[in-house]
Image (cartoon, rainbow, N blue to C red; front, side, top):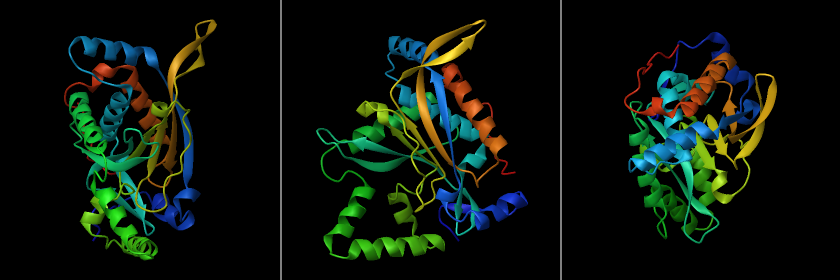
Length: 278
């Protein structure tokens, strides 16, 4: 019935019952910190710049996540009304600051699981450019502006959206306009020169994972008999533990980190696109 997902009926029984025990996302939040060494990413970015490509650390992170999700499809699950769903599309929501404004606009980008670093960066660049204009620049802005036109409409509208969403009746047009219905929400806090945080996953909508990037920092790493300080990109990751097991998440972020320490692996179509939902 839902426009944005297909119900998973063959999930592990413990995960089928988990939403009845942990009814809300804030009950089920797990948090981890991921530090990725900068030097492999920077060397790759420098090499690509010589070839005429202006890639960014954020673009690498998005490409690595898309590629990881191609191998680990349970990342694209969500919980709604105590049921597990597999999302029909893969999208990433991100705030874009408008010129001269401390606030920004938030919408989402859509990706194919076969996208490589070139395709991901093209989508990201287009998204940022489209949303940096003045005024309302996307469907989310239009929806919010409409709700604010009539006093009291926001309270009624949001309440109605929540009820419709709970029972899978939210129209596809509203789902597409909502940045809260997305595979991943990411926030690049380094762009405003601040540290990463552990940002809550929203109870409204279907987002199961939220990642923030922060200022680069040095972290101690053991190399042989010595402890050295390695310049790293830190990330705060918050996950809804009800969509998959802890061991699955562990494998996901090992693979995610592997792609970021070997960015060449992000070029060309993925070797694996796993469609299994077990």
